[in-house]
Image (tube, rainbow, N blue to C red; front, top):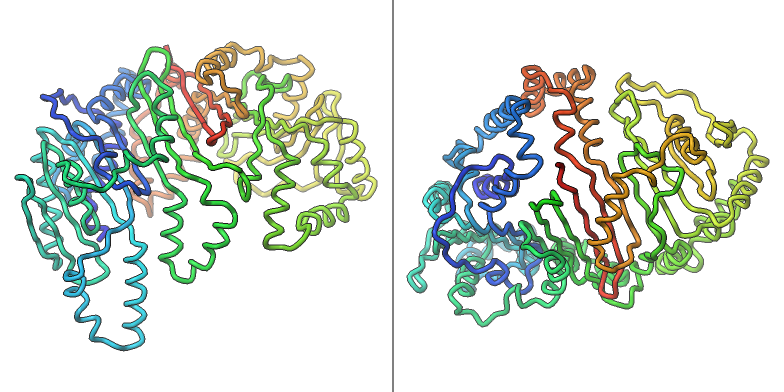
Amino acid sequence: MLRFLAPLIAISVSVLTLAFPSDATAADEVVIPGSPHLLPEDTLLYLRIDNADESRVAMRESSVGRMLNDPKLRPFAGDIYTTAAELFTQISDEVGVTLDELLAIPRGQVAAAMMPGNPPDSDTDAAQSQEDEADESDAAIRRRIARKRREQYGLAGLFMVDAKENVGDLMAIIDRLEARMTGGGYVRRTSTIDKVELVRLLPPRPGRPEVEYFKKDGTVVFGIGHDTAAKALDHWLDRSEEASLSDNSNFGNVMSRCIGAEATRPQVTFYADPYRLVERLVKRGGAAALVWPILEDLGLKKIRGIGGSSFRGGETFEDINHLHVLIDTPRDGIFGVLRPETGDITAPDWVPSDVTAYSTVHWNFAKAYENLDQILALFQGEDPLKRLVEEPFEKATRMNFQEDIIDNLTGRYASATWLQPPVKLNSQVVAYAFELKDPEKAKSAIARFREFKPNAVKVETVAGSIVYSPPQPRRNLPQSFRQPEPGMTIVGNWIVLGDSDTFRERIIRAKQGGIPRLVEDSDFDLIVSELGGKLDGEKPFMVSFVRGADYLRLLYELAKSEDSRGFLRKAGEKNVVARNFSELLERNELPEYEAFEKYFAPGGVFGYNEPTGIHFGAFNLRAQ
């Protein structure tokens, strides 16, 4: 079945990427219902592009689009596209169009969704199952039971593509798909509803899905599963008395938090009902259904929905993204571990100014630990963390896990990421830090451990600060990898862990004022000021600062590295994608990094807690 659906998958992928926009012009607008009005109320997964033409324009005007049109980079970008087109040739033979033609087909709304499957008609089901029902062997009975279970908890899919005047090209792909399916035994049936032809392709045997589609007003709706497209058409023609996804209160609540936050319409939206989706996946798995009561006890049902949106364009922002998790109250069960709190988001004075990323999170670790103990008690008996964690930990270290660690945390966590030169495959190093209520208490606990196991910790002084690390021999790593150097140090009120001596020394020097700090950096100030506008008065429990250009630098340096190119050449012996990319790098001399860097600006991420759930946002500033 997957090979039959390759054309539809290809269309979906091409639309979602839209990386190389065409110059299609707008046609006369026909009002097409929004996909939430055509989908069933109990839709499980949903993804929608609001307007393919507008997305192309936004992509062309984005930093990536402008970068690809840069005279210095255009030859390299053109070669990338040529390579992609060559890789697409196999799919092109299947769908009958080139990559350029396929990318140009969608003009307006594009959507894909998964929903519960509709049970087949009794007469259709009987006709398909007649031969199998006559077999009374044990194997046949097991097959029938498994099939009934899959039908009861079945899944269906729906694709919607507004192609406008390009609908003929899209129908040519559908025709090729239909020819393959009928050649494989599918039977074609048609019906006409208000002058719209509905095509149904019935499978030759049980276990294979029905496929149906219709074309209306330049839009094709293609369904996998019984009555999928038919019910969408009923909604479109206002013939249905069933509720649609747009009537779903969970969907409305989630999307209002993701769409209403901005002044413009998002280019991309998505929605998921994870509880209902997992329920069907588990229950259709037979024996796996036995774990479902456990998942229910953990409170999975409290997740009422997850949704998100993505906006592109604008003078200030390259993109703005939202994600909202709708959670029922009270937050018990597994959600008792979710204990976000608000607090200071300013970068600590030990974070150097040249970090790639910085994040801070405020969390009630003590309450989360207490609730985790209650959850584990459901399966492990009374006081599970005491038996499984605290007692073994104290025996191994002579430290009290509760008093020396949990009770000494303020609830603030921070991390900093840095690109350590020279660039290696693992050059990206991260420092993980926890703020302490009493640093001296932490030092005392470490001292007790050292007395108990004097050879387990190596102690040295770096720039006036004590660094604790495990004694270990150097690992035999390839030249393209950085040698990990695990250790920790206490700087001010923070205990900082990481695996790079170089970064650890920079952290200590930043604390002492020897090198510039992130808190004094103009990029960080700019992101924090923009965060204030996006938070709209909410107090965050999590904030991140990200320099996207630094991540690009890592990829750039790796692409120039002879070690990386050698790896690609070797991988290309067995992988056509790796081979094509290796040949692309051999054919083209990469421009200087500054030619790429100017198209990227820093960004930020935030999260805040609210009575109905947890909201996350992310944005990247527009490079000037």
